[in-house]
Amino acid sequence: YISGIEMFKKENYSESISSLRKVLEITPHTKTSSLLQEAKRRYEEQENKKSAIYFLNLARRFYSRNNLNEAYSNIKTAYSLDNTNVEITQLYTDIEREKLVREKIQDIKQKAEVMLSEKNYIKALDILQEALDISPKDEEISRMIKEIGEKFADTSSENLKSSVENYIKEGEKSLLNKNFDTAIREWAKVLILDPGNTYASSKILIAYRKKSEEQERRLRNLRRMKEKQRR
Image 1 (cartoon, rainbow, N blue to C red):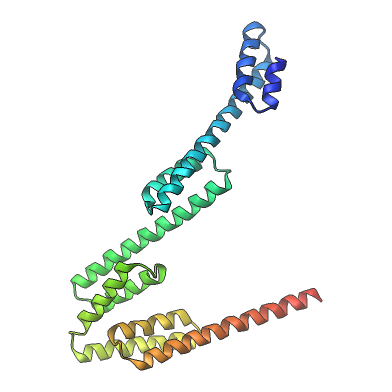
Image 2 (image 1 turned 180 degrees about the vertical axis):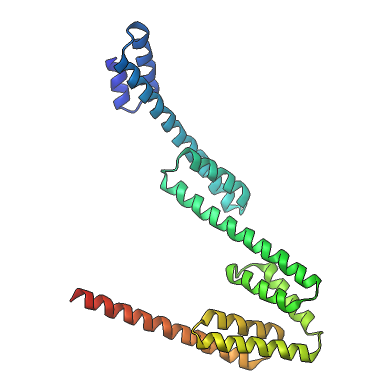
């Protein structure tokens, strides 16, 4: 019994279980039985934590290879075994977030493909611009946007002019409301349809400058508030 307690204190639960079982075979006792159950529980927890690390390392390996499905499967298993491990929880959150983003982008691409097949280039462009905001480095999205620009160039000049004017107006409206990112996005669409449009180019630069000025203004106000709080 003493040996079982000592092993329990040293967190050697396997040896503690073995010793306590022998004690119970000779003299059954409630206290010994309770300790044995606790040793079993902690042993299982201990083994789960070891297994969780194994699946964590597997998830990291697959994630580094951009195999998101396998990474997600393994980190999910790791999390189910040990949801107290900070590294497991963090990676699980990161992979789950990226998985949702990729699924959303894929859904947007499919919708854009439908719009392209129907020759609804403006709608397709709007949809793809949303995807590009989420994933700026996605080569397929960039290729599809470029394709829209090329196809739209073949349409009538009146359609092109109308679309360009609409995007410019939306950009102006967004800039007035200090929605700088939206304004930049609208004028970027103009440049896709009309690459030589200097008005849109200059407006994008203005929007970036105003966005920077607004951020600086907010930082100054925040500093002033903090200074007042200290006084």
